Structures are given as structure tokens and as C-alpha cells.
Amino acid sequence: MRRILTLIVALAFSVPASAQLSAPEQVMVETVADGFESDVALLERIVSQNSGTHNHEGVRAVAHILIPEFEALGFTVEWIDQSAAGRAGHLFARHEGKPGSTRMLLIGHMDTVFEPDSGFDTFTREGDRAIGPGVEDDKGGVIVILSALRAMKAAGTLKDASIVVALTGDEEDAGSPLEVARADLRKAGEWADVALGFEGLSVIDGKDFGVVARRSSSGWELTTRGKTGHSSGIFDENAGYGAIYEMARILDTFRRELPEENLTFNVGLMVGGTPASLADDGLSGTASGKTNIIPPVAIARGDLRTISSEQTDRTIAAMQAIVDANLPGTDAEIEFDIRYPPMSPTEGNRALLARLNRINADMGLEKMEEFPPSKRGAADISFVAELVQASLAGLGPSGELGHAPGESVDLRSFTRQAQRAAILMSRLAAETPKRD
Image (tube, rainbow, N blue to C red):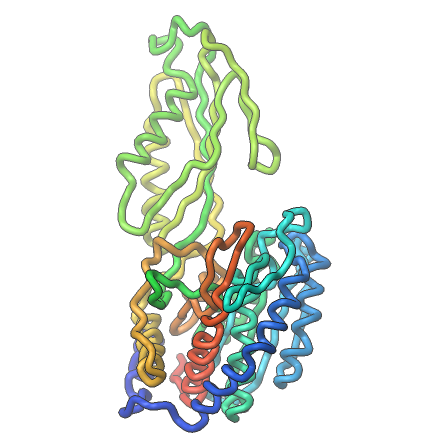
């Protein structure tokens, strides 16, 4: 808490009294605008290279395209192999700035949900709109990072900036164990003062929003069991209720008793019968049965999304209590798989958005309100949000149809997003935050 309050005070006192861009900031604005077509050309190169999470060679190929781009800006580049987690690896680029200046962690990812056999594998441009796999999520975000850094270099503000760029190769399907897959990102979070996430910009009715919170993403698997036998005995003292009625009781109690703000718990797959089982990958199942046989087993899998660790813990406890209140002749067990933690809304995050809104005012752009966290999924920034003084996400471009064939991006959004980011990072680089 003391670290957060320190940053709030620093941000409040470092905002210039007059709402205007400095000469170096004007250079950044112009540099981003002038580099637009070059940025689109680089976007086409990396989008045209398939890098589905499980296409390890493709992910490495995208990294090889990006490495010289960072090296040209004076960054030291490291490829972090992730074969131990069953994934290709991560690309980290580091820039050492002025001692004591704000340490900034910029987060994006090179992989996409589109594997080589997806059938969606080309880049097309229609004026200010581009279409292709990962064109917004998150190859567009990578381009925004590079565009902002080039603008800082042109303006002379990059030399003092302490920055680590972390581009993961498995954001869409994180490797296992997570302790290995996100160890380097967590280490960078421990170093950083501020984390900036460059996934897509949130837009509603043409208005840009700031992302100060993202929900967690975890999974659960529920198994219920009952006594099998002739259906004529269902509900009686000896036979009990069977596995499917127990499953129905639990899921309906979840629906009736658990709902609260920013909490969701979806059921994605369910099987039950005599017998029933899930495939090894948990993505499909088999079941058989007869109407005159009481089913002995049922299995369901779902997800759980929360806004805070406290909400996660409280919801898990409530779900467990519901699971334990069994119908006669049945029992049940539930297992949880905690994956992406939440990026909770904090005063530090809101102070950082306030700083970005001062930049918006200086640029003549509209104020960005907070985007509802229930409308954003989990992201890698959540792994470091608890470690840094402040986090801000949604700094990438805006687009449509993410994770679906036809994914597109508004190329016009690249310019304002890179300009905002360059100015924000330059102002932060000029500060010396206090650290514990």
C-alpha cells in the first residue's frame, strides 16, 4: 500500500500545470504519424507468419523478425526458451536508462489462437482496416510498442528510459507448469515500478476507454457419484438420487446463490451416464446410459472469473460448501485449476489512467473512462499487477472479431495509441519514484 501511495503522490505533483505538449512530445507525435506506413508493413510481415501457440517454429520466426527492430533501438535482446513448459519461448528486450528513473515493463505477446490448420492465414488491407490472424491480438500491440519506442528515440527521451519489453510466446495457451511459464515475467514485475499492457484498446460507440482492471481466469472440474440400479428405485432410501440429479442440484445452486458483481462461472462441458468419462485433454467426453438405469457418475468442467484474490478465495469456499451438501445416496468433489490471477483495480492504476488522461487533454483527445472489467478477459499483465506500483492495460490498437476468422484492426488507432504511450513513458522516465 505504501508503494501505491508513493506513486499516487509522485504522479499528482509531476503533472505539468499547463495543458500542452513539450517540444520533444511534438516530435514524438510527428514521428509516429510519419512512420505509419512502415508500421503497417511490419505488421503485415509478422501477421503473415503463422504463430499459433503450438506452432513453436512459427513463434520463433516472429521473434527473429522482431529482434533486429529492438536492437536498432539500443535494446539488449534475450530469447528465453520454454521447452520445459511445452512452449516455444519468450522474447525479452531490455533498455537501461537513467539510474533511479521509473522502471517500466511493457507486455505483449507473439502467439495467436490461429494454428497452421486454422484456414485463416493471410493479411489483407482495406483502407484503414487490416484483416488477419492476430492483427489486433496481439501483433498489433507489438507494433504499437515499437512505434512508441521509435518516437521516443527520435525525440531523445528513450536514452533515459528504463524499460523491459516482455513478449510472451504462449499468452493464448500458457505453458505448464505456470511457475515455469511465467517465472521470467514475474521476475521482471519484481524489478518494475509500472506495468503497461499492450493488448487491444477498449472502444464503445467510438469512445476509447482505459483498462485499470482485468478479471482472473481459472478452471474447475466437478464430479458427482451415486448408486446405480433400477430407475424404479430413484429417490428412495436405498437408491438415493443418482449422480445426475446431484450434478443438477449443485449447478443450479451455483446459479442461484453465487452471482455478484464481476463474478462469472461458466459450465462449458458436462457428461453423465452409465458410464461417463472425459477425454484426456478435457475438451470432450463420452457417455452412455438407459432411461431405466440410475446413472452412477457425472462430470462437468467450467471456468471461474473474479476481480480480486479475495473474491476468488471467497467464491471457491462457497462453491465447496455447496458441493459438500450432498443429496441422499450421492457424493461429489470439485477441483480448481488457478490459472491467470486478477488485475484488481487499485488507486495506483487509477492514478496512472489519470496521467494518461492529462496526456489526452494535451493532445486534444477525449478523456478515457474506466472500462468495465467484466468485459475484458485475462491477460499476462495480471501476473505482475500485484508486484508493481501501478498497471494500465489496453494500450494496443482497437479491432473486431478477436479470436475468430476475420479478426480485424482499425489502423487509425495505431497512431493515437503509440503517441499516447510514447508520451506517457517519456514523462514517467523523467521521474524518480520512491521505492521500499
